[in-house]
Image 1: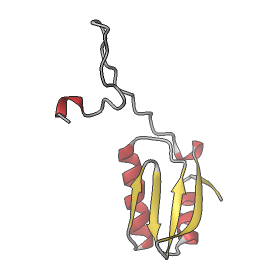
Image 2 (image 1 turned 60 degrees about the horizontal axis):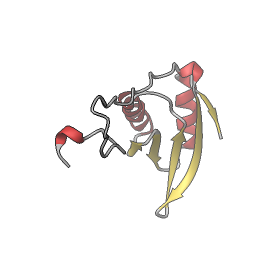
Image 3 (image 1 turned 90 degrees about the vertical axis):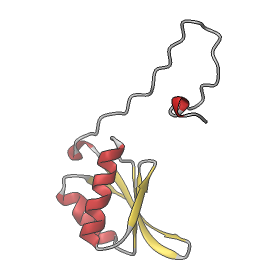
Image 4 (image 1 turned 120 degrees about the vertical axis):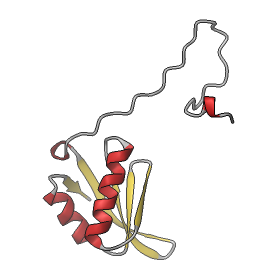
Length: 107
């Protein structure tokens, strides 16, 4: 796929000569007080991890929160599609950190 069509997910061809593609607008990041994050422990590939779901906001803010969580817990992790994975069994540390930042947690 050429670079000029990167971001046009699902648009193949339009017969309308006046058609202008409008990229989806990223939604603004909600303040921590307005967000309710779902935090739970999972086992993936036989190893424990903590998954944080339902983050509403820009990808840059998700990556920043992921980095802060990894630094606080002293472990690795990743973020993708609005979810953050933190390696290890650090559920209590993650919950305390998120609550200290003002996020509401459930799960």
